[in-house]
Length: 285
Ligand code: SF4
Ligand code: MG
Image (cartoon, rainbow, N blue to C red; front, top):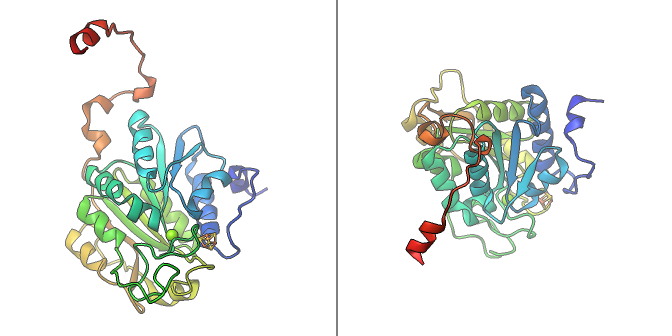
C-alpha cells in the first residue's frame, strides 16, 4: 500500500471527476507523509464549499467551520496549542467574500498557520455563481450578462495586510503543490498558498488548459524578500503571465512568538487552577 493511503478516511471523495480538489487532496497526503504530519501533531480546519469536504476524506483531526470562518477556528486551535501544525483549507468565495475580514486580520497578526486557498474562481458547491475571484466580464449563473466587478487578488491582499509568506501553484502539478505546502508550513508566520485549480463543472474559463498555458515559474534570480517586487508580481495576471512559486517571504516574528503567554508550554497543557469567582460576581451583579 502506498504510504499516503494511510491518511485516507474510509469515505470516498464525491468531487466531480477532474475537480482540482482531488489534486490538492493527493498533494496534501503526500506532504503529510514526507513531513510526518498526523493527528498527533497536526490539526486542520476548513470552510464551506466543495473544498471543505476534504476534511471528510482525510484521516487527520479536523473541524469544518461555518462559511468563511475557517481562519478563526484555525487561529483558535493555534493559540490553544501552538505546538500543532495548523492548516486552514479555504475556498475563494468562502475565504475572500464571507471570510474576507478574517483573512485580512489573520494576515495582519501574522498568525503561524498555513492557509491553503482552493482558488477555482467560482462558487462551486452552490452550482456556479460569481465569486470574488471570477474574471470581470465572465458570465455565470448570478451574472448572466457578465460580471462587472474586478476580481480580488488574494496574494496582493495578503501581502499588503501583513502576511509573511505568499505562494502560488497550479494544482495540476501535484509534486510542486506538495513542495509548496511543505514550504508554507515550515514558514514561521502567516502563510497563504493560492492553489489555482479548475471547477470543471461550473467554470469553463479558468480551466486546466488555461492554467497550463498561462502560468510560469519564477526564476532563481527572483528575490522573494523584496516586498515591493512581490506586490508588483501580484499585478501580473493574464496570457502567459501568471507567476508561480514563492512570491513573498519575510522573517518577521509571528503572533505566537510575540505573545508572552505563549512562550512556554501550550495553553492546553497548562494545569487548571480553581479560582473563587464569587467576589468578582458580587462586584458586578
Ligand atoms: Fe469540484 Fe466544481 Fe464539482 Fe465542486 S462543482 S466538486 S468545485 S468540479
Ligand atoms: Mg470556489
